[in-house]
Image 1: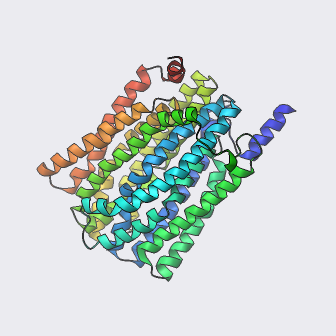
Image 2 (image 1 turned 60 degrees about the horizontal axis):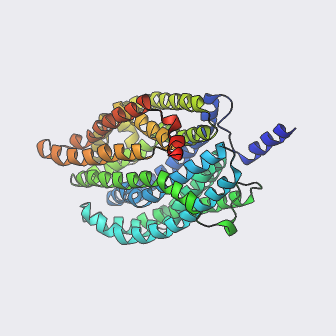
Length: 461
């Protein structure tokens, strides 16, 4: 009877216990709602781009589509640190340590509030200067400034949304985030059409629609988290920094935050070189980026699922299960990524027409897609291996690896290679090159180190 009530409670809360049962079924049942959620998110990102592409001009589309690296630079750091909180919550949850689960949830959420405030201040102050440094064309600059002022004015909704998602997923609940994302996606599309197509507010309207939709998602998450009846419930009266928990969050999350921020700098350098080829290159590459979001779904979802699976099982001392789950997740992600990459290679010219209708822009996007598409399996391996490392507490490994190759080597390569081969394809080859190098390093760490006992060894030291 006790086990029956326990399973009924888990089902009602939407939480999946990843330490028991079939490995494949557990990972897939946890990852599938995340994949559907990411699919919805890509659809409403695509709706943003479609509305702007069809109801504004090419300069407006270029302004929005080229801004991904800048937004990720600001919020990526804080979201990376929050990843550390997710790993800590998962480990305590797997070990059934109720007191520390509660402490970790409230510490992580309070960090999210402070991160929201800092992101707003930093984003509003730095974005105009970064746009100038990125050599944003003069005809695109006004729309870019308008978009980022609206976006960073409401960036707290984005940060808190990701914090709430990370807490819920750390507890094995990937289902309710899907419901909330479905609701916000519908709201975002409706407001896009109203603000941009109806009111003619342009890029500012698109950013405003995103902020409102994300804000409603946060509200739904908070209602859900505050209504839970067990030790996983969010209680605002318990919000405080627990020094030992926060030290663990920083130890696990700071490397990922630094990694996200510095890689964004590398991507900003790449985007700067793309900008030098003109507005058509910007919009063509931006259209590719929108399609890329769909292509990367298997990679994104598995790399987000593995840290929770690994951390819960290591917390429960299920070492062999953690290794088998890592192998299954990595292999499945690589297979799906390569299949989708092959389809993208063939269908890129047609898919890009959803967003841009000028032959010049389509040509740039197709060039990039056909250079990187055959190498998506390497990207999948790198992301999923990094997820495994974070799940076992070795966040420093992916940080050093990705900073070295996805930032350092990428910047050096683009800077030097364009002087010798000043064509757009040269920029595109930066990605397969750096994915290959990071994959080699991750393979060495996965196959030649005892990563399953890393956390315990560090605790004994």
